[in-house]
Length: 68
Image 1 (cartoon, rainbow, N blue to C red):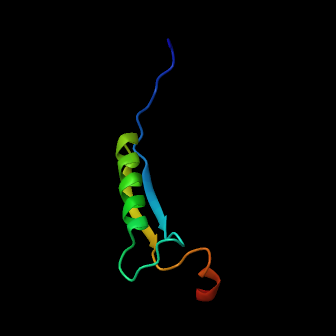
Image 2: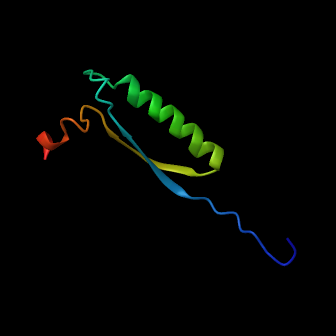
């Protein structure tokens, strides 16, 4: 497009991973590990910078109210 200048921006992003109710284990769940992998790949493909990863491992929508 003539006359339009596109700027390349690098975005600082955070990822949020949450436990699936089907995957309740004491260690980091497979669900969390899978989410991290998928989201990390997506962030890299977008050219973004991953600033922080947030994880709610051990809490799901079924027990979240108990920790308030």
